[in-house]
Image (cartoon, rainbow, N blue to C red; front, side, top):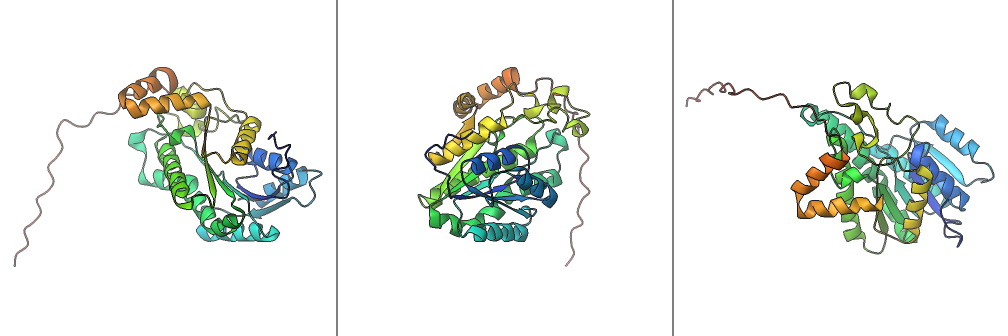
Length: 297
């Protein structure tokens, strides 16, 4: 649980996107246990209702709004509904995300668009209408990214690119919002979940078996969502700017700034998938394009 014996969260209002499962659900539980009022945004209204019903002893601390935050209008309506319910907003946690597994040479523009819409634009859609509410309380925004926001991983190109955009946008928010709104970028490694090792099975038939695993085979122990949620809330309380978990991951990130070649070697040798299939060679010579007729005047 978050160490909030000082009553930091009592009476505060938080909105958590993707708050009906996984890390989002654990954030909801810990915020409620510490006296906060929480608005849950998720696509499945029935699942939201089950989450609220399961949180006994919290009275009217929880409210839900079923919405797809990838839709700008739906996200704005959800933020206005939940923040307006209690007349304030102290914390917005942009937690929605999705990942895929595929070779970079097979990724299409549609794959990247889908990843950017879910992992980046969903946060933009929720944050823009929340500015006014958060500024009144000098509140906080938490953008849940990934270690992949700081370095690429094999077979995760759309995910890494979209989470990197979320990291860059978080930095932009910090620079422009100053002290009026606190911004925390959370970059966790793989998180423990019941379907770990199976959720990507349908996407990875032609990839190494390690690509099925969380983090596409990176040698990291899965993070407990209970532990991670507590770390995130404590980081908000301290108004930290970035949370990297595990903390030692900052070391290869720093090495990458000095020597990208060495950092790539470390990833292949000690971290990510090593048995990467050989790429299909390009033809030795490409056909010349047909000559374009010269227009006549």
